[in-house]
Amino acid sequence: MSRSRRVGAYTAHEDARTAACSTIALVVAWNQPIYPFYVHWIVGGDAWSACWTFLSTPFFVAVPWLATRDSRAGRALLPAAGIANMIVSAKAFGPASGVAWFLIPCVLVALLAFRRGERGYVAPLLVLAASAFLVQPHLGAPLGSFSAADYARFARMNLYSAIGLSFVVLWSLGRAWLRDQNRSARVTA
Image (cartoon, rainbow, N blue to C red; front, side, top):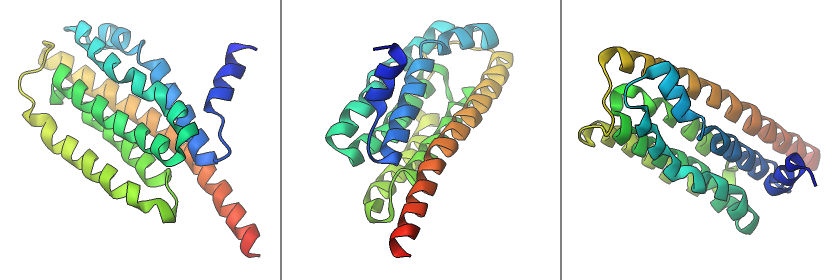
């Protein structure tokens, strides 16, 4: 079996929203090893501090595994892992790096991944995202050292990355949401 088929089988789920969250999680996990290189090439400074973001990689990789056992828990793990990754990144780089922009795709996942009857998962994730946003300026001195010019490049890079990830989230979960809408319209018709 080819690698792409194994990945497809790992992220497959009968629920379109769960499959979308699994795919998004692996997109993030695949990009995490590249992130320190982006920091080195685009930002400069203590790019080694980007290696702290690897702490969340196992959680992103675990989303599809957990989703096969409990669909809602798997979908909830995706934004929770993203929020935790933002907190670790804020400590590693400092709030001036713009890592808080990554809370936007986390919030989008929280809002789109759950159906009306599953809304009990949304509020805690939104509270967690808001808490992370509020706590990140109070994490103390960053682990890495960056100049004002480095931080300007860092914030711009993270803004563009968060926008790109938001498009992936909207595309993946938006398509799943539309499938659910079409399915429910056929059932009620």
